[in-house]
Image (cartoon, rainbow, N blue to C red):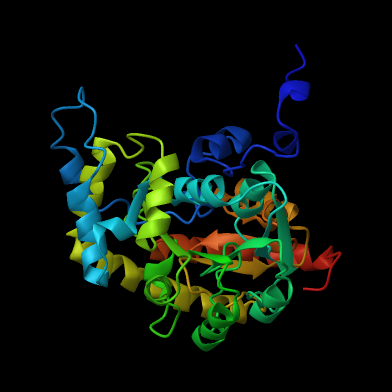
Length: 372
């Protein structure tokens, strides 16, 4: 049977999502005893202890979860002056992104986004028959003026990933305010803030635009700061009319009982949240100073990872570090050639990374096919 011919035409254009190298995969490839994983922007401190403790209280796994999750939605929304009717939960924030596309975007529509940015934005556009309109970054940051200029009568939505993945950069708050005000009112605005907690004090707060601009959806996740990547829990905020429509396409029981319990526990874990942010800030400062010392360029990071330019092909640099037991992400896989995306790790992991870069740089520069 020719399944390709049976598939919808947009699906034929897609490729499976590539999650990068796992620890076990790295060990097998180079027969390594120990691996440092700095490739997926996970929390190097592990998971929120209160989240893990909350999950351990589950005694009724044979029952379906409460699909409404009113308590959890209230805990998420009320600190921001919102209501549960403004809140949607997802099996990770990626699911909410897909809900958004399935609800609002279809054949003939255009979706304006940065390039490069998170790979699921163009993928979901293609999957729903729409056209991703890719606007190149300017100095690693969303070019908001060019994104506005790319809007046409066919534009259904604009997507801003802030901080952007894979560059870790954030947009200027004043520039974003102008962008949001000049965006036509019938164009939906999707703001992905998966790394919001790591951003500097002066940065865009997407929830402010949920309150001030109709047609705005903001998503967040507990995969990063709270260390719940494998639990899969994300959430989004929008006006009531938008959330009502998203709920119509949401898969029933999409948030499991363990995930809901973990999220509630994590929300109470102020100590873990504070310590994680402090360690990330210290690690970011250390890596920034050390990369400058090594003469390596990195975009200013507003997240828990850095995008670092290397003087050889990204895949070659990735492989050389992998041989040393350090897993990073090749920019070749992310639309960012000649860069590595590197998670900020534990202090000792950051030191080992710098030592590995320092050891590899002379050979990289000697064979460099591109300017460093």
